[in-house]
Image 1 (spheres, rainbow, N blue to C red):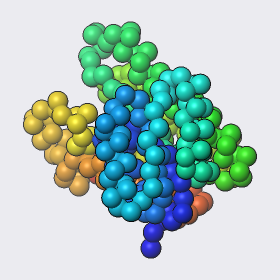
Image 2: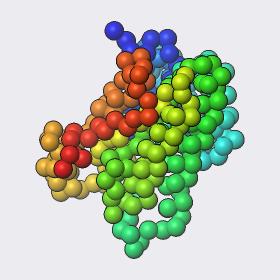
Image 3: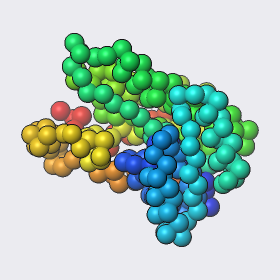
Length: 248
């Protein structure tokens, strides 16, 4: 049975990686999908074509989540092209891996501008629409580092901790008709992580009870669950998709 039949889902950062996997998963679950992107038009268009090849409906929408006006324009474009929005997934994000003594102020600001401010702008804009309809679901993409912290990626971990906090606050604010949850993936095989060394991967696998790295599809499946009626009594929660890594 499909989890999202007849639903409309919008995914930011859907041109590649985890966001792309979420968009494709939601399409397979029966949803029409808005593919949000900032610069990678060709990759966003490719995601749209993949969804259409599955027999689904999709629309690529450009916009910079750091800009409130552009976020509101994205919402309006999605409404015009796809109709009322049932689910919004905040997957857009950036990360700079730098030791604490080398953290650049510009990278700190960029991390929080995308991962926190941009996510908030999206939640606020689509939340107004969903609350007006009396229904809706928002799913945010956090990270295991939002729970653990990472001295080699300090701004990223701090920003994802903020995402977890925002998820709780907005779940309270938007209740009872709009649910807000998050997923927190571990190290995932994507092009964003192509720089990771074999030694790091081996250490991660050795520290993970389920004995492998995460795949984008793992997080996508968790998002589909939280977006569906199967999670109709779940809000304000962050679901770790980390193979048990944070159990240590």
